Image 1 (cartoon, rainbow, N blue to C red):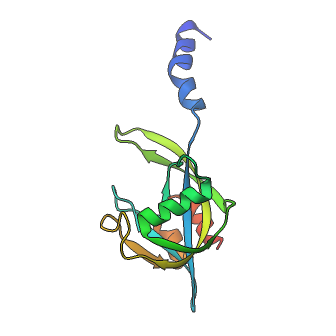
Image 2 (image 1 turned 120 degrees about the vertical axis):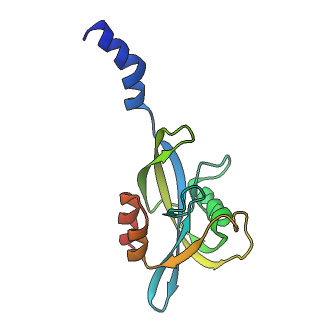
Image 3 (image 1 turned 135 degrees about the vertical axis):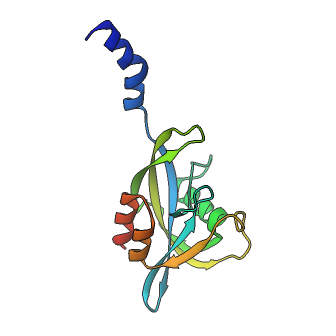
Length: 152
């Protein structure tokens, strides 16, 4: 490899290729109805696209606990029960403020919902919608999340 190519590889390409993924934790909030399972989707604050509650790690909390915290803050979820082990994961590109993309691995935790609060931290910033897993899979943009939703 030429000196010029080696400098490009070491200075630019290698760090981009080998850069570790960031990790988030998400809550797949589900309720049982007479017509079957429904999934809670919320809108993102920036683009308004349909997502599930998710966020960055919180010091002192495990993945499932972080997912529950995000479900409360973003959607007002009061859980009936939840799973401590991840149901699955998906990867997506988060667009940062500078316009670059950061690959994020999102670990998803199952949350059975008892009820939704009317007042919660991000109440005026997002919409909530209960839909079937099939409709949820159509609404979200992440193929890996769609696959998880269809597996319910």
